[in-house]
Amino acid sequence: MAGRIVARCLLCAAAVLLAVVVFLSNFAVVLSSPGYLNSLARSTSTWENAYPAIGSLDAAGSIAADTISYVTGKSAALTNSSYFRAEELSHLADVKRKVVLFSKFFYFLALAAAAAFLAAFAMAKNLKKSLALAGRVLFASGALASAISVVLFLLSLNFDASFTGFHIFIFSGSQWQFPSDYLLVNLFTEDFFAAIAKAAITAAFVEGIALMLASVAIGRCPAAFRRFV
Image (tube, rainbow, N blue to C red; front, side, top):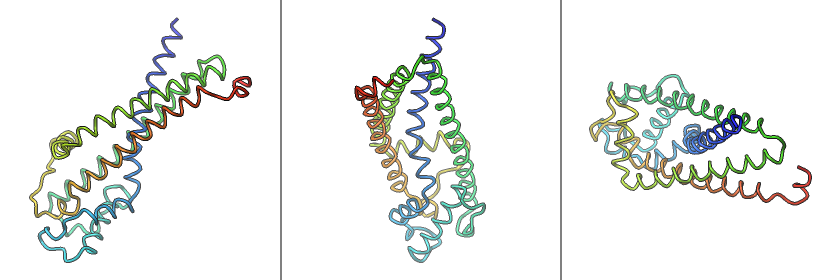
Protein backbone atom coordinates (compact mmCIF):
# COMPACT_ATOMS: atom_id res chain seq x y z
CA MET A 1 0.00 0.00 0.00
CA ALA A 2 2.77 2.41 0.96
CA GLY A 3 4.65 1.53 -2.21
CA ARG A 4 1.60 2.30 -4.34
CA ILE A 5 1.21 5.71 -2.68
CA VAL A 6 4.88 6.49 -3.25
CA ALA A 7 4.59 5.43 -6.90
CA ARG A 8 1.57 7.68 -7.43
CA CYS A 9 3.34 10.61 -5.80
CA LEU A 10 6.34 10.05 -8.05
CA LEU A 11 4.11 9.88 -11.13
CA CYS A 12 2.36 13.13 -10.18
CA ALA A 13 5.69 14.82 -9.55
CA ALA A 14 7.06 13.56 -12.87
CA ALA A 15 3.97 14.78 -14.76
CA VAL A 16 4.03 18.26 -13.20
CA LEU A 17 7.79 18.67 -13.56
CA LEU A 18 7.73 17.51 -17.18
CA ALA A 19 4.94 19.96 -18.03
CA VAL A 20 6.90 22.85 -16.51
CA VAL A 21 10.11 21.73 -18.25
CA VAL A 22 8.29 21.50 -21.59
CA PHE A 23 6.97 25.03 -21.16
CA LEU A 24 10.22 26.59 -19.95
CA SER A 25 12.26 24.77 -22.59
CA ASN A 26 10.89 27.14 -25.22
CA PHE A 27 12.29 30.14 -23.38
CA ALA A 28 15.58 28.27 -22.89
CA VAL A 29 15.71 27.70 -26.65
CA VAL A 30 15.03 31.38 -27.31
CA LEU A 31 17.83 32.44 -24.95
CA SER A 32 20.23 30.14 -26.78
CA SER A 33 19.23 31.52 -30.21
CA PRO A 34 21.06 34.84 -30.63
CA GLY A 35 20.33 34.90 -34.35
CA TYR A 36 16.58 34.87 -33.74
CA LEU A 37 16.82 37.47 -30.97
CA ASN A 38 19.04 39.75 -33.05
CA SER A 39 16.68 39.56 -36.02
CA LEU A 40 13.67 40.20 -33.81
CA ALA A 41 15.33 43.18 -32.13
CA ARG A 42 16.12 44.73 -35.52
CA SER A 43 12.56 44.29 -36.75
CA THR A 44 10.84 45.64 -33.63
CA SER A 45 13.24 48.36 -32.45
CA THR A 46 12.36 52.03 -32.55
CA TRP A 47 16.01 53.12 -32.56
CA GLU A 48 15.18 56.43 -34.25
CA ASN A 49 13.36 57.54 -31.09
CA ALA A 50 16.39 57.05 -28.85
CA TYR A 51 18.40 59.94 -27.47
CA PRO A 52 21.28 60.46 -27.96
CA ALA A 53 20.71 59.45 -31.59
CA ILE A 54 22.18 56.16 -32.80
CA GLY A 55 22.43 57.06 -36.48
CA SER A 56 21.25 53.98 -38.36
CA LEU A 57 19.47 50.65 -38.10
CA ASP A 58 22.75 48.82 -38.61
CA ALA A 59 24.31 50.62 -35.65
CA ALA A 60 21.25 49.87 -33.51
CA GLY A 61 21.35 46.24 -34.62
CA SER A 62 25.01 45.97 -33.68
CA ILE A 63 24.36 47.40 -30.21
CA ALA A 64 21.34 45.12 -29.74
CA ALA A 65 23.39 42.07 -30.76
CA ASP A 66 26.14 43.02 -28.33
CA THR A 67 23.57 43.49 -25.56
CA ILE A 68 21.91 40.14 -26.25
CA SER A 69 25.29 38.40 -26.24
CA TYR A 70 26.03 39.98 -22.87
CA VAL A 71 22.77 39.21 -21.04
CA THR A 72 22.65 35.62 -22.35
CA GLY A 73 26.19 34.97 -21.11
CA LYS A 74 27.81 34.64 -24.53
CA SER A 75 30.15 37.53 -23.71
CA ALA A 76 31.53 38.58 -20.34
CA ALA A 77 31.35 42.33 -20.92
CA LEU A 78 29.16 44.82 -22.75
CA THR A 79 31.27 46.22 -25.58
CA ASN A 80 28.91 49.11 -26.33
CA SER A 81 28.36 50.14 -22.71
CA SER A 82 29.08 53.79 -23.51
CA TYR A 83 25.73 54.05 -25.34
CA PHE A 84 23.78 53.30 -22.15
CA ARG A 85 23.13 55.33 -19.04
CA ALA A 86 24.21 54.04 -15.63
CA GLU A 87 20.71 52.90 -14.66
CA GLU A 88 20.36 50.98 -17.93
CA LEU A 89 23.68 49.22 -17.34
CA SER A 90 22.55 48.31 -13.83
CA HIS A 91 19.35 46.78 -15.20
CA LEU A 92 21.23 44.84 -17.87
CA ALA A 93 23.54 43.39 -15.22
CA ASP A 94 20.44 42.39 -13.25
CA VAL A 95 18.92 40.77 -16.35
CA LYS A 96 22.11 38.79 -16.88
CA ARG A 97 21.96 37.48 -13.30
CA LYS A 98 18.33 36.47 -13.76
CA VAL A 99 19.15 34.64 -17.02
CA VAL A 100 21.89 32.67 -15.27
CA LEU A 101 19.48 31.77 -12.44
CA PHE A 102 16.83 30.76 -14.97
CA SER A 103 19.27 28.42 -16.73
CA LYS A 104 20.27 26.76 -13.45
CA PHE A 105 16.62 26.45 -12.39
CA PHE A 106 15.62 24.96 -15.75
CA TYR A 107 18.34 22.28 -15.68
CA PHE A 108 17.51 21.48 -12.05
CA LEU A 109 13.86 20.92 -12.98
CA ALA A 110 14.87 18.77 -15.96
CA LEU A 111 17.03 16.56 -13.74
CA ALA A 112 14.28 16.38 -11.10
CA ALA A 113 11.73 15.33 -13.75
CA ALA A 114 14.08 12.63 -15.06
CA ALA A 115 14.75 11.38 -11.52
CA ALA A 116 11.03 11.18 -10.74
CA PHE A 117 10.42 9.32 -13.99
CA LEU A 118 13.16 6.79 -13.34
CA ALA A 119 12.13 6.25 -9.72
CA ALA A 120 8.49 5.67 -10.69
CA PHE A 121 9.38 3.25 -13.49
CA ALA A 122 11.81 1.38 -11.25
CA MET A 123 8.80 0.42 -9.13
CA ALA A 124 6.98 -1.07 -12.12
CA LYS A 125 6.95 -4.86 -12.29
CA ASN A 126 7.61 -5.21 -16.02
CA LEU A 127 8.10 -3.30 -19.26
CA LYS A 128 4.42 -3.42 -20.11
CA LYS A 129 3.58 -1.74 -16.81
CA SER A 130 6.30 0.84 -17.43
CA LEU A 131 4.78 1.71 -20.82
CA ALA A 132 1.38 2.19 -19.21
CA LEU A 133 2.91 4.50 -16.62
CA ALA A 134 4.77 6.44 -19.30
CA GLY A 135 1.54 6.94 -21.23
CA ARG A 136 -0.24 8.29 -18.17
CA VAL A 137 2.59 10.66 -17.31
CA LEU A 138 2.86 11.95 -20.89
CA PHE A 139 -0.88 12.56 -21.14
CA ALA A 140 -1.03 14.40 -17.80
CA SER A 141 2.06 16.46 -18.67
CA GLY A 142 0.72 17.33 -22.10
CA ALA A 143 -2.66 18.36 -20.70
CA LEU A 144 -1.02 20.52 -18.04
CA ALA A 145 1.42 22.15 -20.49
CA SER A 146 -1.46 22.94 -22.85
CA ALA A 147 -3.55 24.33 -19.98
CA ILE A 148 -0.69 26.58 -18.83
CA SER A 149 -0.32 27.81 -22.41
CA VAL A 150 -4.01 28.65 -22.70
CA VAL A 151 -3.98 30.56 -19.38
CA LEU A 152 -0.89 32.54 -20.37
CA PHE A 153 -2.34 33.22 -23.82
CA LEU A 154 -5.43 34.72 -22.19
CA LEU A 155 -3.23 36.83 -19.91
CA SER A 156 -1.15 37.96 -22.89
CA LEU A 157 -4.23 39.46 -24.53
CA ASN A 158 -3.59 42.36 -22.16
CA PHE A 159 0.15 42.21 -22.73
CA ASP A 160 0.87 45.63 -21.25
CA ALA A 161 -0.49 44.58 -17.84
CA SER A 162 1.14 41.13 -18.05
CA PHE A 163 4.47 42.66 -19.04
CA THR A 164 4.32 45.06 -16.10
CA GLY A 165 3.33 42.31 -13.68
CA PHE A 166 6.18 40.10 -14.88
CA HIS A 167 8.74 42.86 -14.30
CA ILE A 168 7.34 43.70 -10.87
CA PHE A 169 7.68 40.03 -9.88
CA ILE A 170 11.12 39.37 -11.39
CA PHE A 171 12.78 42.74 -10.79
CA SER A 172 11.19 43.78 -7.51
CA GLY A 173 13.48 46.10 -5.61
CA SER A 174 15.40 47.27 -8.68
CA GLN A 175 14.76 49.83 -11.41
CA TRP A 176 13.29 48.47 -14.64
CA GLN A 177 11.17 51.39 -15.90
CA PHE A 178 12.88 54.05 -18.01
CA PRO A 179 11.86 57.18 -19.97
CA SER A 180 10.67 56.59 -23.53
CA ASP A 181 13.81 58.11 -25.12
CA TYR A 182 16.25 55.72 -23.39
CA LEU A 183 18.15 53.45 -25.76
CA LEU A 184 17.29 50.25 -23.90
CA VAL A 185 13.56 50.94 -24.21
CA ASN A 186 13.86 51.54 -27.94
CA LEU A 187 16.15 48.61 -28.72
CA PHE A 188 13.97 46.10 -26.90
CA THR A 189 10.38 47.23 -27.18
CA GLU A 190 7.23 45.58 -25.86
CA ASP A 191 6.72 44.18 -29.36
CA PHE A 192 10.05 42.37 -29.00
CA PHE A 193 8.97 40.66 -25.78
CA ALA A 194 5.42 40.07 -27.03
CA ALA A 195 6.77 38.18 -30.05
CA ILE A 196 8.94 35.98 -27.81
CA ALA A 197 6.02 35.26 -25.47
CA LYS A 198 3.69 34.43 -28.37
CA ALA A 199 6.21 32.04 -29.94
CA ALA A 200 6.96 30.28 -26.64
CA ILE A 201 3.30 29.93 -25.64
CA THR A 202 2.31 28.61 -29.06
CA ALA A 203 5.17 26.11 -29.08
CA ALA A 204 4.30 24.89 -25.56
CA PHE A 205 0.67 24.37 -26.58
CA VAL A 206 1.68 22.35 -29.64
CA GLU A 207 4.17 20.33 -27.58
CA GLY A 208 1.49 19.61 -24.99
CA ILE A 209 -0.82 18.26 -27.68
CA ALA A 210 2.07 16.19 -29.07
CA LEU A 211 2.67 14.65 -25.63
CA MET A 212 -0.99 13.66 -25.35
CA LEU A 213 -0.89 12.11 -28.83
CA ALA A 214 2.27 10.25 -27.87
CA SER A 215 0.50 8.83 -24.82
CA VAL A 216 -2.30 7.58 -27.06
CA ALA A 217 0.26 5.98 -29.38
CA ILE A 218 1.90 4.21 -26.45
CA GLY A 219 -1.49 2.90 -25.36
CA ARG A 220 -2.11 1.47 -28.82
CA CYS A 221 1.06 -0.50 -29.40
CA PRO A 222 0.88 -3.03 -32.23
CA ALA A 223 -0.30 -6.47 -31.13
CA ALA A 224 3.08 -7.99 -31.89
CA PHE A 225 4.81 -5.50 -29.63
CA ARG A 226 2.24 -6.17 -26.90
CA ARG A 227 3.08 -9.86 -27.07
CA PHE A 228 6.74 -8.99 -26.82
CA VAL A 229 6.27 -6.95 -23.64
